[in-house]
Length: 68
Image 1 (cartoon, rainbow, N blue to C red):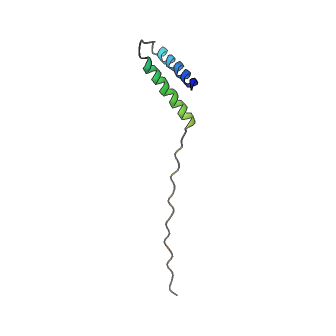
Image 2 (cartoon, one colour):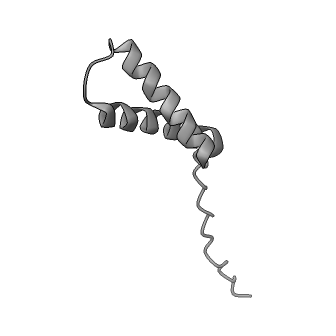
Image 3 (cartoon, rainbow, N blue to C red):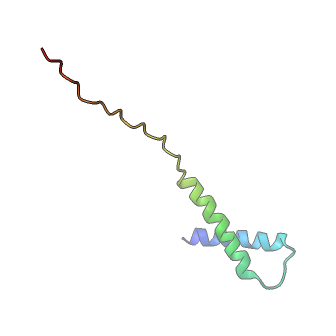
């Protein structure tokens, strides 16, 4: 977990630096970095492909017996 925290810290720093190093809003940069990294992480481990719709089995009516 410490690796994720370090990655968030570094990403937040880069985002802050790119924004011109504004005073305050450290929480906003942290949360943005956290959201970005968690989304990346989830997309790598939880790729879900939608299942193809199942075709309904045909209902067959019982055969009518012919009178002999």
